[in-house]
Image 1 (tube, helix red, strand yellow):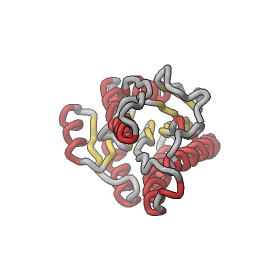
Image 2 (cartoon, rainbow, N blue to C red):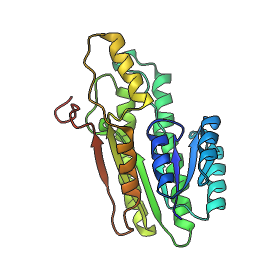
Image 3 (tube, rainbow, N blue to C red):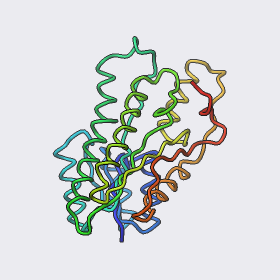
Image 4 (cartoon, rainbow, N blue to C red):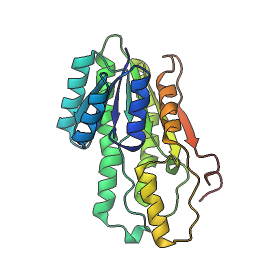
Length: 244
């Protein structure tokens, strides 16, 4: 039975992805801060393991990874998903502390998770595994007022490329999924901000979050000799091509 750790597993894309992997028969380690939600998932699924912790806490993350791999034997995949959007404003209206918070979660937190997964995959026998980073359409084409989030997601693209290169010698593949307008709490919050600024605004098209989750499963199920390096999955009619 294959195993995966999913960060940000208590809601949104992370929770939907956890459910899809559990339905596919994987052992799933669930990382998020909301222990009660993780406990609910693990109670409902025998193959789910709740690993409540903060992705920015290196010691807690080490304990979570060690506990999960001790239980299931090895780590086949990481879905490096936990993240936040941060303030939506021009750069001169963004406090430095707010920028630091986004970078801490979206870059440092993903670095910590990738570092732990890489170390486990490198030393296990047989060696290897797969790291899937959750990027964003903002890693390529930002939306207005997204300086913190966009900067962080451009960093994740660099992380993906670097992990792909460094992982070759150890049979560790790395890919990135860039998801656009899946209906989650984060997108609902963004839409609420848009409507607060302009109640007559037309909201962007959405897709079911499970379409994104199934795409992550597809990436994880690739054979060792194949890799989805970058995947874009989005609502068909959203303004991505040509936006700016």
